[in-house]
Length: 542
Image (cartoon, rainbow, N blue to C red; front, side, top):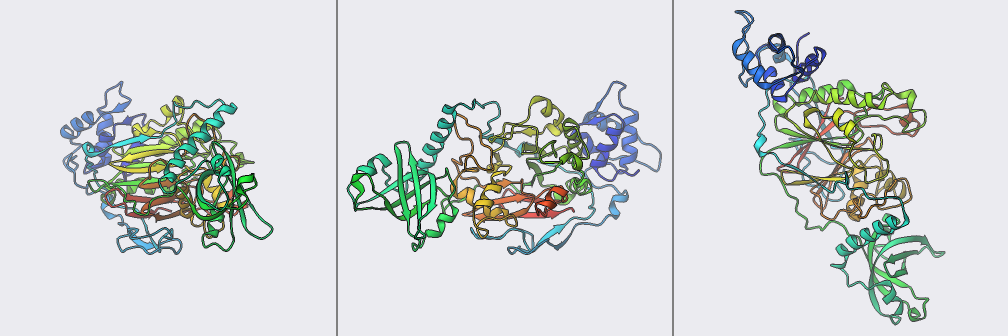
């Protein structure tokens, strides 16, 4: 059959028992007749070759001419095969209303109340093909905060003490620059009626009979009760609080404070938060990254056709600047993740699922930089932080020299800090907070809460499994330029204090389990991030 894209070339080579360097596939895609070029390259392959090199392809393309009517070119222009007759991409309306989008599809100016899915996303039909010519020397990709190979937790009591002390010290440092805080043991001895401040971790929140809020704050010296009156203008911030997060309060001590029964009447409440003056970093050149998650290969509902359209599009002129692919977890559907999952599996063996994912990954351009972190469906420990995959799975997913990091990790791509976190804690934030502050239809709003708390999973002992380590890998010491999550299978994005928060949807249609819990996924979308401007365009392939 006709070879429509480099993805098809990879598939055809695989069916004949060959793999190929990324440059070799690109050269074959640039031939005037890719079918004839592939036949020639395979026919003249060394007998013992399993992987075709770019040198071999160049040599065959330069020397071999099938007949007088068919020539093979190594030039960088498009061939005149049937690809020229395909439709180019067109703009269509999006899947639901949301924040305004510019005509170019960019996100535009937003604030902390920015909406998610824009009024239009770009629907990608079957696109024209091109030869990619990336500037490989200009690329840079570094990873920080990766727990892989660094995990020290044994589950002993001391490990839990250590991780919470580390969390408190690092987050309290961010808050002490704004308040003149005293330890709770000192506050307990202060005379009544005075003003003071406390930085503490929330150990309890409860409402009083009068409708006020009593917050118990704990630091390394003790605990102290703080009362937020219901008529204070900041009282609605109590709705955003979660157990175990670190906050600061300022207020007035009750008159009986010195006798051990004191309380603070809170006048101000502070989160670690992102400074409103924060200015993100950008790349020095026009280059783009595709942000995706939740591929779920192995599920009966994996959208293989949408994935292939996405991979095909990555080979087109429109996508020539997309040089990075960042995958925020759940590459496969996994096994035994939820009740009766076996009934919804297309591939029942976990290793076979990763083998198949690797085959799909071969469809994307070989010159792309690929980085992946695990999710809760992947074959790693469920407790966060999650180390990257073991060596056996890394070998399976070695296509395009893909890099694998832990969950979460900060990935610095040409100067842009992208915090990648799969997003299991979003379930907890959405369950605990009011709908207007966190909900599944606007997942970026729940992400705003995590940015405000400067921690990706603040509440311990709830829906999110947390592993004790010597340090808390889930704290945001530095403000990211971009925050990328998945997990909830919903598409949403916006800017919070100039930080772009993106939840990238999924590549899995609605399963029976999702239907039973009323999850309507946004499937087959690919957010494309301009690293030089941090504007974003969403491409639809479903």
